[in-house]
Amino acid sequence: MKLPRTALVVIIMAVITLVGCSSPTSTGGNPSAQTSGDASTPTVTTVVHDANAAACASANLKFGDTCEDQSQIQYMIDQPVEFTPPSDVSDPAGDGHAVKMTMTVFNGSSNVWDPGMLVLSCAPGGGLALVDPSSGVGWPDVSSEQDQVAPGQGATATVGCWTTDPASVQVQVGNGNNAGHWSD
Image (spheres, helix red, strand yellow):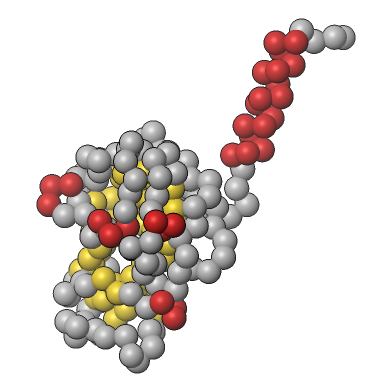
């Protein structure tokens, strides 16, 4: 049986779409991103816009959920895990426990997203962001154009912060009414 040309094109496009959307490694939520390489380098690969993302100002985001802020930037935070940074990494508020997590960003806006605009904090405790290049924690060089995320693109990096209780950590990305709040 000979298929009409239009049907053949539709079948080929469907196969290409299915193969192109599969990802052997994923961050576990949407936006999903294929990750590889050094954790300190944001991976700019296949990141998919999540059409069902909650508004970041919504309450009750769970680790793995995606939210979108008023600037059309989507964020997804995986479950934080405690780790021990080197002794030369300062804990300015004296919280005592370092946690790190995978953060995926999708830029749905028409402007370049600069990681220098990222505001990250944790509770309980002072919750200051933690940067430890030797452990691959912290969005890399915020002044570098290569670390910026173009419209329609996404990136994944490992970020961290200090907390007094890693078992009940809450993570905030953003500030004010536009912030996303994640917890267990």
